[in-house]
Figure (cartoon, protein in one colour):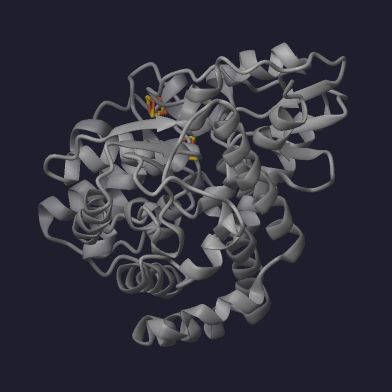
Length: 402
Ligand code: SF4
Ligand code: SF4
């Protein structure tokens, strides 16, 4: 942390691309430079043994998009600063009650149920009637991310309706009684569930058409622990990641097909740091589709690139080329290394900031004037689905498969 924050020359370039700064009404601490400044204060407090700061808000509202890093002349990553600060906050009492209780509830339910809402059965429903190869060493690992969107979306709204105090009490209660976390099953957004099930089945069909055989864990499929890692609960995350890895090992898996950018990034880049001998061949499903043939249409579409792929050192999966081969693809004013996050990562703790970011991103996407907006991440889809023009790349590609 100290190495990262001490590089800052206070130029403010990062503020021009940080999505949360304007979305939080230009409150400096909710922008990239403000987070770096606070990180420095945190380092000083730790050094002097003082504990006067209650600074969790700005670090939890960070989207971890890394847009700031792309423009910083000193190479400071305010997203990384936020993550390191959350690790410190998770071990101390620097967090505000709503954040601490909600984060602790999510960690506790995930550790107990291997799913942040205790919904493993619900997360397997999309696969009803589909066949899988039990003996394959290749695993289709959904990581539950698409499936959880209809519930987390509703949970965010519930938090707003209940108000802070009631939400904190509910979080505390569920934390102590993880078995009742499953009541969130009644809070699902049904139209969104229909969409994500279609996308999961589209991914399945595309992979099968590409000749890939794979197993699937069904109701046993664990969530990868993304929230635990993102919230900074690193000790818990390393224990949890071991448990998930044990499940892969028990099923003789050697190759893992992930289907969303967050799970891919976590398994590819974080699991090997925390799980000894994590040597699985982790891939993204689009890698397997390169030899499929798609029909060319004159359809004009706009592609919202996932920042988890574009702004990190992640391989280019040729999604742009694939979409461009099928249609007349356009990119919004912020694309490539200047891509703007959808706001999704802040949805649970900062629904207002998240909504403002997604409204602005949606405006940019609409400004291209195309008929459709294509996303390639369930979090982006959930946050940007403000009308019927938004669609996941999986069903878009399947519709055009020859
Ligand atoms: S762009 Fe980099 S050096 Fe400039 S204020 Fe932001 S973090 Fe500091
Ligand atoms: S990671 Fe994204 S949200 Fe966080 S400070 Fe950087 S630009 Fe802002």
